[in-house]
Length: 240
Image 1 (tube, rainbow, N blue to C red):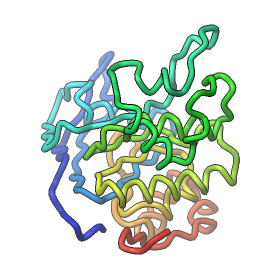
Image 2: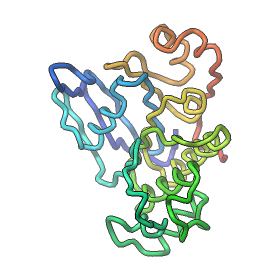
Image 3: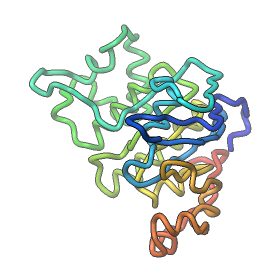
Image 4: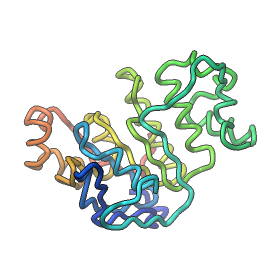
């Protein structure tokens, strides 16, 4: 974990959401500090995105409590709804909701490696380029809390590795707390400090190495998943 600061940014205490006569997710408890990367994994319908929306304040919990210690929050959703019939350049997209200085836009695009695309239309970008632009837009105001829901969608194998390395670098450089939500166990496991495995509730939690050896993880993802994953303990103090 980053040693610059260990200020707690987010606390969930037995939080849950109840909809349509059932619990979508319940009894979720964790804390997130500056410089820490927390990964939330689980099958479809396990409550991952719901937990992220509780953390963001989009969904009010029906049980438990959520405490935010920052208002500098950025979120990259799982799916982006864009009318692709309208021409929208990267620079226009970066300023959709508020006026941002060109220097700040360039800095964010530079940090994510896509500064050269600033005048390119979004619909002409590759999957990896689009994800980097979305990430740039999220970090342009230097958030303390960054939440990324499936951040490598539409990206090829090599692009996934590069994106997770980029997320690590951003977390270190901004010293922000980061929540990653993903089905991709291989690379996420090696890019995180702690893991929470959800299936309507927290099945198991801890370091990547602890998680893949737990009975709950093996029951959920299978013995093969546990055997093929080779995580390492991530440390933000080294350079990438």
